Length: 339
Ligand code: UDP
Ligand code: MG
Image 1: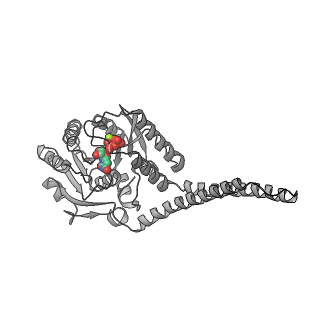
Image 2: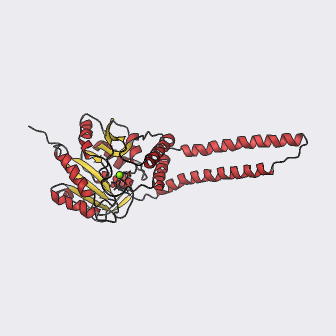
Image 3: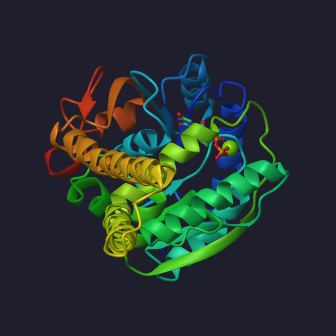
């Protein structure tokens, strides 16, 4: 007698992916058909300006269980992943990009690792595909920064992951923070973890949405949410300026004691400017942490759902009262995400 296999969820965050999303859903469906697990595909349309939502919802009529969720505006990939994890109902949830850069053909290896007992399976980039050298350098720099300051090893890490239901529940219900860094949290959370390597495929259609400022913002969010190291650097700067003050002050006293007129107007100005800059930078860093605390205590949800389109059976199984224009929040009150 065969034992019924549990449901798997595939969560796809998508922003302006109207041309790629039907290919993506088809590719996932082809792979999943060979796996003999029931599955659902959860597409989170992250405020696209094109017909991503409609294209995704159309695929639901093509014999594939697609649940399409439309966010009320572009909240960013982290928020979209959060929405997908909250909506997913599977015993394991796979998060994968919409642009086919995370090859769906890797999913069976991830599921195998999960069957062998891993609670989290990380997709690790073996090669970065045809990425331009400056994009690779930029990503490496950001990862190095996060690794150094935030204390998380992110080399070749990706958002292509499989999470067991137990892990998803912790992320969704037990982490109250709103500003999340998915890649970092998936490592921080513990449990048995495994890695599966994959080669980054070229983007099928469309363009990457990451700008340099977006990446720097992500690196900063990651660092601030994982570490107080920048605040410690502020303290080190204070010690450095104190030492400089002692040396310069000592020299001034020595000159005065020896009857040499204190000279060095330029040195004084430079020192004042230097110390002034250190103070301003330090205030800026402290301000960033205060801003994050302010954002967290406002308790705003990380995203707002504008509407959902689900097959009737999926909608029936959903939580009562959750329909169009539903606001979902992370944490204890609502049930996650932002790496
Ligand atoms: N994405 C999103 N919201 C955004 C930006 C991107 O949901 O604000 C999605 C995008 O549609 C894709 C995935 O996140 O499925 C990765 O985005 P992208 O390909 O731009 O990033 P890259 O591969 O360059 O890291
Ligand atoms: Mg991409």
